[in-house]
Amino acid sequence: MADTAGRLHTKSNLMDELGKVRRVAEKGAGTVTETLLVIDATTGQNGLTQAREFGEVTNVTGVVLTKLDGSAKGGIVFAIETELAIPVKLVGIGETIGDLIDFDPEEFVSALFER
Image (cartoon, rainbow, N blue to C red; front, side, top):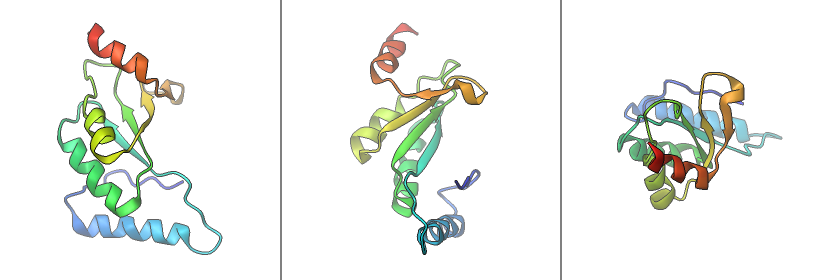
């Protein structure tokens, strides 16, 4: 597991380092089985750009959508899934590990209309 928190897709040197982390992890007997991009539910259209940039460098396999416990709706995940074919895998509805749950698309859409 590698946490690359704080990487900005606009900083090419940091993105180059992230690509290197991926390449090193794949060397020898290493296998990267999952690469998750964590996106804050309050992120707007910038989230699509982030997903595109990180996807090019690290082959993102899924999205973790956090901060769904507030008023944010996380609608950017529709564009990410539609345009980039990156599925949402987990959602964060609080601040503890127990608040990280599997993504349920039907529940997500229902919650969008309830707010």
